[in-house]
Image (cartoon, rainbow, N blue to C red; front, side, top):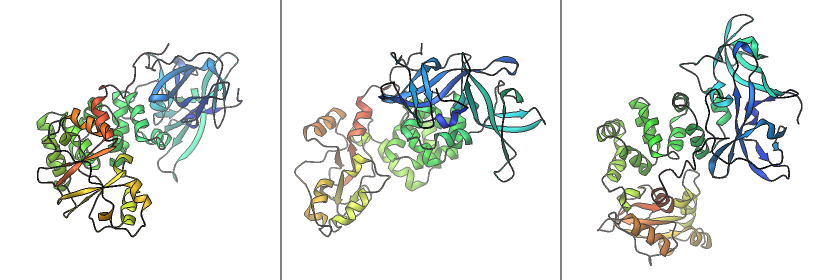
Length: 412
């Protein structure tokens, strides 16, 4: 077992291995039991994220080593049932960071930035609290005190900040952060959402189940909610608004910038289980006179999803959907084999027909599977490109509604 003090915030994201060195998952939080009278809390165990984004509970008795770069577990089977927080349990990172406390020595107010735990002969205990007194880094003081030297951690806080927790979670991918939010209380989830910037929150919302998306967005002020919708991909924004009451959705659409709201309105006009309802209206679009070098530069952009970056849709102007006449598709593998100066018009594949927006979901799925496609263009009856349906759009609709959650069970 590693000796000395272990600060919990430094555990977040550490890989966890079994005794043979095989990976188990990653550490996400620590579960403690607060005790009355300022007595040091007992550490019950750790929350690990394993394959499939499932969070499980591992008792501290199973932890044999905690180092700066890994956590090692002892031998034995691991209970893979999904973690659910029980009454009397507190999650250190999710619930204690950013709490306001009083430093007993001088009665000053401070904010919790971390806590540390230590192993005794029989148990693990939370023994120290790292707090920041004052505001701003230049005027603040960071100090570490004994657990019983602060008060306020056992009292529910109505307005808790989120800066320190977000610092711990900053490197998480949007899908992983969505998983963290899923496990938080409604109050804490709202506080985190309020602290995230619009683009980050939009990315996280796109990874959440639809009912949680609606709940989280509805908890924001209307102006903020409209800003977040503008930062989302139009198809994801349309899916979210489609789950809301029509009056609420229309109110938010009115608050959005007109050029941001228009493609969302167009998508909402199609049935949910049709190609039009599934598609994104912002695929990669270029004209036939663009070069291979220009096309590769476009699909290389970090914000373009891999399924959309797999091909470039070539059209006559205008190049915003609905575009001019659709001419064909230039696949990235073909682009990689061509000289950079080659014009896209010479690289087109036209042997697979596009689909109409009214095409039902099962036909879209069959089309993608038949031709081994990752995306298919959607055109109107006059041949104007309206958007594209990607394989991940289809998967979102054919998988069970609770596929993001996995099996929800309590830990043993």
